[in-house]
Amino acid sequence: MAESWAGFGSAIASFLFLYAMVKDHIPFQLSDYLATFSRKVLSFINPYDQITVSEYHGEYMHRDELYAAAQVYLSDSCSFRARKLKAEVGQESDKPLVTIDDYEEVTDTFRGVKIWWYACMRLPNSKTISFYGSDEERKYYRLTFHKRNRKLIEGEYLNHILREGRDMKIRRRQRKLFTNSPSRNWYGYRSSSSWSHVAFEHPATFETLAMDPEKKREIIDDLVTFREGKEYYKKIGKAWKRGYLLFGPPGTGNSSMIAAIANFLEYDVYDLELTTVKTNTELRKIFIETTGKSIIVIEDIDCSVDLTGKRKEKKKEKDDEEKEKKPPGMEEKDENSKLTLSGLLNFIDGLWSACGGERIVIFTTNHLEKLDPALIRRGRMDMHIEMSYCSFEAFKVLAKNYLGVAKHDLFDTIQTLLSEVNISPADVAEGLMLKKSRNKDVGACLENLIRVIEAAKEEAKRKAQEELAAKEKENEESTVENKASDIEDNNSKKELASE
Image 1 (cartoon, rainbow, N blue to C red):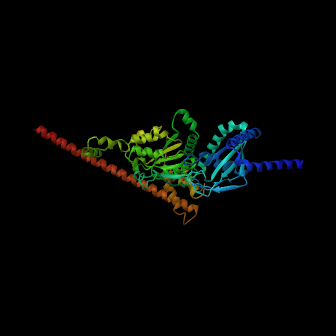
Image 2 (image 1 turned 120 degrees about the horizontal axis):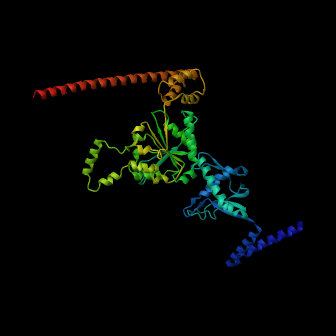
Image 3 (image 1 turned 90 degrees about the horizontal axis):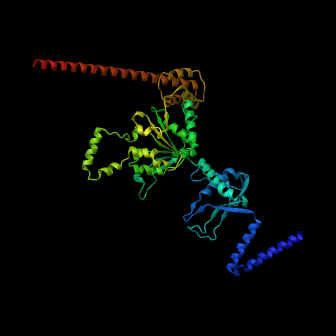
């Protein structure tokens, strides 16, 4: 048997040697025919097919999305089977990506079908640098699978890789906090994007949010329903977005709520400053450049720009004067160039709101009564969330966060005081922190909070007395004016009668 294998090996070696000698003398037509014939013969012998996924594609060498998704997918699902690994940190990630190294093979299983992944690299043929990619280093993945499973691999498995890889990439990415740049910076030599960003690192979560637990659970359930509702929104014919209106007095946690929602959903945050947006066209451009899985925030919308559609008399007179000075035909053009309420409404739930998907729009305000009803109606702001003063349940969350306690003898006193006075969670948190750096005793911190709440109670009582006194004085002055007016009327009547 050994002699037979030795003879076979010798014959193969002789054939390869002779082929190397004569291949340059074989006509290219015959060479192509032999290559085609050999592939057909091998296809009968080899029952496996292969698919290549290249890192770059196209004339301008764009990085292939399927390759990037496969890289993340293999890192998460298959890298534990590899012996050779490599680690790298991408531009969009804040965590190292550990995936299989070049020339390493791993296996994956999909619906009982086994797939082999092999990380390949093609080296350049020369030492020269090329910008066109023909001689550059090429990386690619090669999938090998049984030919009877080809339909499953092409139809479902590759889509599975793309979908799972995208989701994993989003979870691994460094989330960002965006703010819109003034439109004057969008163009020119040193032009910039309409958005600039920093890393989003706000630590607020629903666990640390000072709010009633039942209201918190209601918000979380609504967010989960939205995140999992892609097919439902498509079925009912609505854009995959949701609007939240946060309203309440200052210091009640609007910013913390936004950060908690972003951390819960793992979304980016776009903080839209309306005062830098001059036209409806600019607003649409800004919106188009936002991505999915994001939260678009307009804070203190009642203070940003005048979107009520109502004009004061003084402003109207000023506009009329400016229109008289403008050349004929320019009035309508200038009027249409302003940011309008209709432009913002179209931004929220018009045709442009359907561009992309999985977005949340959040408005915050301290004065709900100042907003135009069309801006906050259901369907635009789907859920209205009142950020109220600190309740006892919210205080217990703050006490656990700041002091690490769930019970204390002073809790009953604090509960009584909180039921008698309106105080914001921010003021309560400050009361818990005042003595923290100098005295770590929990009792001392709670006693300091009690003093803060009592001072707020006295201040509220003083303001109430001042308001009452001012109202009584106003009523007295009104009464005096009415009496004086009655006297004048009587005198006038007497004069008319005497005449």
